[in-house]
Image (cartoon, rainbow, N blue to C red; front, side, top):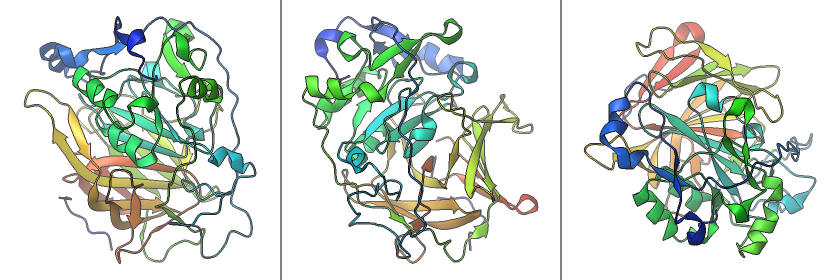
Length: 404
């Protein structure tokens, strides 16, 4: 039973030397934060990449076969044609003979960022708190490299955890100076890809309604990787377990609510006919937390609603990096509580990750691998003190982030 309780671009130095800032953290009613911390409001982004296409080409995901093995796939020993991030076999297994790509995607402000492009084509998406009430997405692309992903924004410290986990190349818009230096000098410093003349037209500017947005066409990334000799070989990505059978136990969860702040909140509604959760995002601020207004989130690339076969809530440590700022490191090494929603039920368990290059693993209450449903997984990254509430009249569960 789930208890109702409070849970404890490549970085080309010649291209970026003269860059100026165009990307600032979004302010959610806390403007004084950046007024007092102007250095934290500066991401050094080149602005000279020419606008190019709005390509929307994409590679289609496979669906589980009718003869999906009863024993499932994983958490290790995946067949060569099965994506270890989704548990899905691919008709074109050559897509798996390459390294994952993580793209940093904007979530706020609403009028600028939504609907995003390409989120429905990601294998995994991580949503996490950055500062001033905002969240951003780390979208992981492995089985697909779609033709339009974005809008792209700046990095945060948690991205280091994701790049290490997936052994990924990383596309982002900029970073705080201290974090930027950490990225440059990291083990993956040669796999960072940023905007500049030598990364166009893969990275390009798109201007709907005169709003200058940085976008990526991942179908054009191969020449960039070749030019700078970035290793794009297949990586070891074991760690997750997939079965089509619905696990025993769990609690009814027709909806899963996740609130990060007075402005950022979302709801995942289970559709029994589709067998998946659909995402509904905040449509307006709800600072007093008394009047939530939702709008279904869609993908501007495909016009499809954003959905996930699995919604995983991770309870982790958010560590403040300054006494005067709202900027955090997020620790995802060790273990902690996890709550997994699949097939209209919510299960309690644990996440585990022993080493920095390990993919996260999910365990049930008996510390055995938890079976995810084959398909896409969204991870909501909350902190350990976050509040959990059971809404019995809705057969729903509410997770509320407690700002450190």
